[in-house]
Amino acid sequence: MRFIGKKQNTMKNIILYIILLLAGCSFSLRKEGEELMRAESMMQEKPDSALNILKQLPPHTLKTGEQQALFALLYSQALDKNYIDETNDSLIGIAVEYYNAHPEPYRLMLAYYYLSRIQFNAGSYTSSILSAHKAQRHAESIGNYFFLGLIYRGMATTYNRLHNAREDVNYCTLAHQYFLQAHAETYADFALLDISRAHHNNRKYDECIRIARQAFDSACAKGDTTLMAESLHLIGCSSVAQQNYRAGKDIYLRLLSLCPTCLSDTDYKNLALIYFSENNMDSTVFYQHKINKHTSAIAKIDYEMYLLQGKTSQALQALNVITTTQDSFIHHVLNQNISSTLTDYYKQEEEFLKNKLQYESKQRFGIIAFSLLLTVFLFVFYHIHLNRKQRKVEENMLLAQELSEKLKRQNSDITDRKGHIDELLKQKFNTIDQLCNTYYECKDTPREKERIYTEAIGMISKFREDPHTQRELETFLNTYKNNLMADFHQEFPKLKDADYQLFLYYTLGLSSSTISIFLQEKADVIYNRKNRLKNKIKNSDSDKKELFLKTLS
Image 1 (spheres, rainbow, N blue to C red):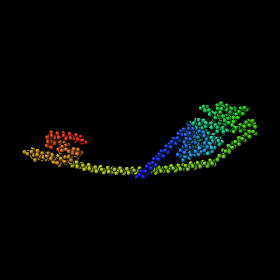
Image 2 (image 1 turned 120 degrees about the vertical axis):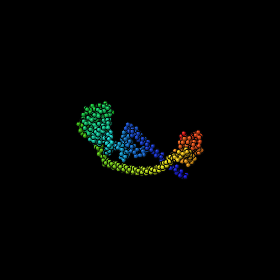
Image 3 (image 1 turned 45 degrees about the horizontal axis):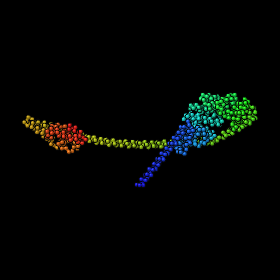
Image 4 (image 1 turned 30 degrees about the horizontal axis):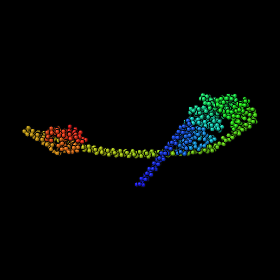
């Protein structure tokens, strides 16, 4: 017994430990989940705060695949929103893999979008475009116009980096359209600026100037100095590219008055050319010195100045420098590992299909398991229902049998009572019949009255003295008065026989004078005995005394 008790205590301790462990895990999971939700809610308005929350949440504390995927997505998103260019796609890959296996269109769209951003930062432009197309597909499926604008803007930037001006213009235009549909006006204004820049890169300078002026007007209406400066920059660049130096000078003077620190090396190069065309060498040299010595803008300004001076040989040498730089970049772009990218793409597609098949397999298994459980449940429910119905039928059968037996007993009682009633009728009319016979026999004789008197006295004596008659009267009362006499005997077992007779006669409804004849007492004596009996009943503890008193009243 002691061993069994120890074993039970050990089992209780183990169970308690398991419960505490599960409660701790549940609390930990809930806390980490709440932190992830808090970071996600702050991502748009306070991305720096969201990043701080995520940094304080070590990845090894995340136990479930869902939490790990959400952390990977939010952390990648926070880095991008805080202008930290991540180039390693291993973290965001966790989110891509998870949300492909557990489809959540919005988060899967985000995962592919930030994967595209990271691949762009790493210089994997082809992979970035492929990921962007996948993000676009999921954004379209949920009708998220704002993210469609962001995706198209990212694709335009990638094509710009690849010097594909036509696709750059195309995707900038799409980004502008979707930002407008999303009512993101600020994003739409800067997308308009991107369209203008794409036209400039495509050497469509008039179109660039036209669209840049639209952006400038919108910026003036909203008081956006950054947008105004960028618009003036593009108008000035296109004007100089058209060799419209006078218009370009006016634009650059406005830009200098608006934001002197906003000028780039390209702007300084253009200002140097403008003043060189006016033979203003001091200003030319001034802006030449502002150009970063390590940029290609130095070679470009040399080339254009030599052309303006008609020094073709020197211009050709400067052009060779520019061409060498561009050839180096083009070589880098063309040597993007297309085969590797396609291999990765098909590998991802294969992995996606594999995950999809696994998901569908699990889904089918879940449906089959649910169907089996439902079938078992229905079978058990039907079996229980059938048993209950059978028990109900059996209970009804027993009830019917009891009712049948009760009916038989009641029929038997009715038969007995009918016999009693017949006997009472017979006795009642038998008394009248006897008196009438006596009167008939003695009619018109001297002994007429004497014979009738003697007959009546005989009947009274028989009623008073015959024990059998007394028992029949008590039986009659017990039968038709709910065991009244039996209850009276039980409640008052120590009374005299005369008191029982007195109660019997009063219960039968006989008058005091009749009772005085049966008991051979005077009427006032009967009255006093009745009062004494009532007092005994009234002073007793019997629960039925009110019924007995009512009988004697």
